[in-house]
Image (spheres, rainbow, N blue to C red):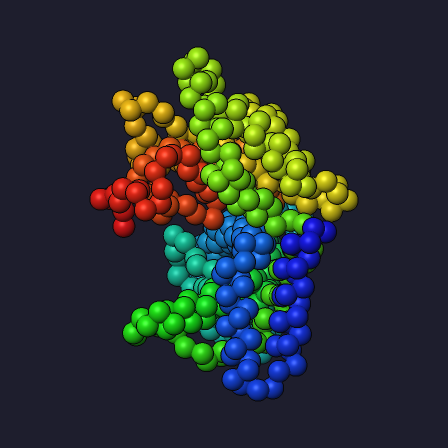
Length: 419
């Protein structure tokens, strides 16, 4: 493991041990504020957190898709149940025989049994009404308060009424779906308990409050009340440290690439791109080659122009140690550059390049995910530009802007459309 990675993980472990053993409230707050500043400012830790948050977001999106599918299925079967109840309401909870020749009518249900079954079922179903869509919360309520009563009714009915086939089929299907409800409910609970993003956001708020008060900003929201966050911090520190120790803070490599291009290679790249434009040669190939060489020297193995979705990926960053089986970092490279006085790159062009890259990345990810160990591929859009306007607000968790313009940060033009 590289020294800077080892150092970042070591700092986290040390703070984690201090927080675990601390019994002094004031000292605990100081440790947590320090941890918040590291999470907020250290580029390696920030990169590891971004990867963990990306993984959580992917899991949450998959859970939402499963919940939506479950809501649709449950709505269909509950509506069928209601229709069946209404259809046989005038009968003693028995359906007509589907195959009369094979079955004989059952004996009448004992008076002491039938009223109890009817009363329990009606009480359980009284809140059910036909609906176009059941919410997940109402499904959980159904599973807790109604599904069990239905199964009890079906078990007793099957011994007394062999003709109630359709009704029993619906109950069996709802019972099968109730197992999926339990699984999704447990997954939802585990995501809430083990979510890194929730704890990290609170740590960042401590850091921002600290900075604001140092700058004399009056009325900064937040305070030093930890509110039990110290119970979650050891788990979060372990997850971040493991991510760093695995060498999968790959977003950090892209941050280093930005510094390398903007501060050490700017003049060279500008000259090469200007010459390529004059000769009507593709500029992106120049940037692609420079990026691949840097990433290789930084400890990664870039796979350039791989085929996916009938298109070419720009770069997949792989770990050198394939035993880690870490998913690659997908880099979609775009360039919006101009070097003539008559040719100006606007903020709108940069925004358009980001939107185009996001569309391509989504298509590529769907195909890359067919390989199980790459299903968690992290996409990062890198846009190299020469815009003289301030476009820093366009950066996001999945977007890194590399500025090759001659304008220094203090000379950047402020945009009117900037929020």
